[in-house]
Image 1 (cartoon, one colour):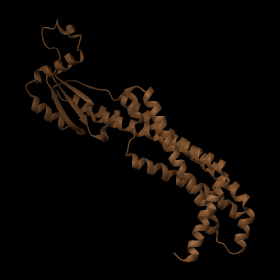
Image 2 (cartoon, helix red, strand yellow; image 1 turned 90 degrees about the vertical axis):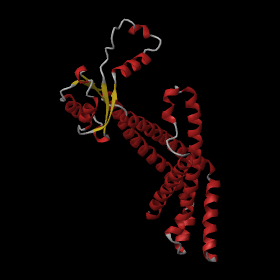
Image 3 (cartoon, one colour; image 1 turned 180 degrees about the vertical axis):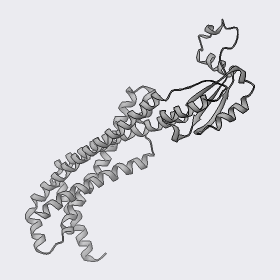
Image 4 (spheres, one colour; image 1 turned 90 degrees about the horizontal axis):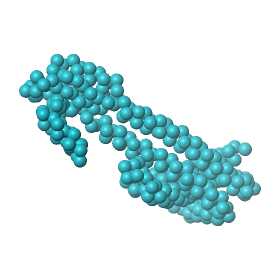
Length: 298
């Protein structure tokens, strides 16, 4: 780097830090505003990603139960093969009458006396069937169930995707809400940051005009303010991490254990930290550029 380049760099750096010191109150306010915006949006991302994981996990489990007629009990392999050939079927698992009774007994643990009066096992043998992901909608599940039910030896087919579909619809609504809230928070944060930096720009209006008169380029004039926004964004990202860490700690103490998955970190901490800081710095630079572009066009 040449001596002139070094001098320019140190001027830009010192000018940015001088402006931050002189406007320490607005700098702190802007950083906190950015931090809360990032933390609220990140919380939505946490919940949505974790809910999506739960829904996908449920979707991979058994989706249909095919009950066999007693007369077909000796034709397990051929029946299993017939079900496996149905378009959309991913896997088929046989559950014998005895295994079905064992499962029921386990579920009734502590109340096994209910079954004492049974002379014989009343439960039918069945197949637990899962479908491919592209068939994981109520309409397509019903299509698969209809084809299986058409097999002559099938007593009944049970499936219940309605509640999963309702949860999926809720997740989609939450995703849309997160996008809307994220856009709103981002726009509000950019507005605050750009107006905060604009105040600093107008406070130095004479200095900037002199720089333009002596031949300074727009980029040279913008650089200190862009660096200022970058620094504010960096601290905003760090503050957002602190806010989220404290919020998560508080929530874990009051949220039931079966709902704690919703506030778990869906990816590695280093990636999350980089995303927060990167997002904060990006918004800081964007706010600075918006403010400076408006000023220089006047």
